[in-house]
Image 1 (tube, rainbow over the protein chains, first blue to last red):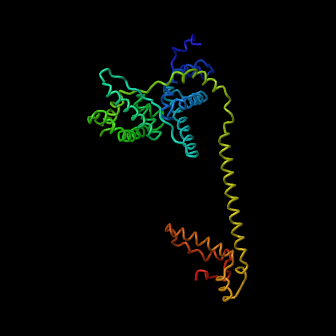
Image 2: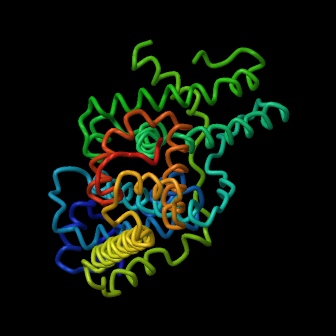
Image 3: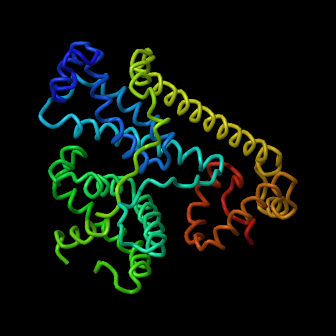
Length: 204
Length: 150
């Protein structure tokens, strides 16, 4: 299956082949983006199991909508918009279910890991692990769109323009959304930063 | 603080954290599962919308039925007081309104209750302004007047 040079092709080449009905081409596209899709969805939905379902549903929707993809942006930019909408639908439905059956929110999984530093003492490592949990919670507590934009910007390194294309809002709106997200994030994380640094925080 | 500076500081905090890789067993057969789901027929595209419309329609019918029942019960309550639907002299009418029947009692108790609640909420201002007109429409006191309040 992989002997047809699929691995060497660009995403856009694979999209063209997938449109022509080549299953292997779409399979390769899924393989390239599945991990990132699950990671992004997991932040939005709060656990890996649901993130897998949501991301797979997004891939199915993307496949059926390939003809609408104008190829003006990267496949990932276009796909993340579908993923965002699918995750948002999922969260809305789940919130309704929770409201109707009065179910408490499940525990959030650990989505972040620290890049280990050789010089860090065990005490510092524990504090850093805790800070990772607080960061995850602070991101999780952001409103859905702010959370998505924040993650794309700081965890995925998207440019403002790429986020604007992906979320389909103006760059000004992206900046404003990020600004509000940053303010909320700072407010939540500041006390823990001070604790971790023993009073000398990162200056935010 | 400038937007770029703020961003830089957040980036500095987050630079030592990265998103964890999803568990390997979760990602096993991921592509195959997606391809399998693609092959499953999508069903009727407007099925969800149809179900929503049916639900809304059922809800509207339910409301209509409920209000119909409410109106019916109100009519019955009014009919229970034969004295008020007759043309009587002023003296007789005063007598009728003061020696109220069971139906009137229920009706007025309910109205008084609702007025009390509105009073408690501070929403009673002007509530009796249109009472004369309603009263005529319902023919509670055919010769006019709201003697019941005296």
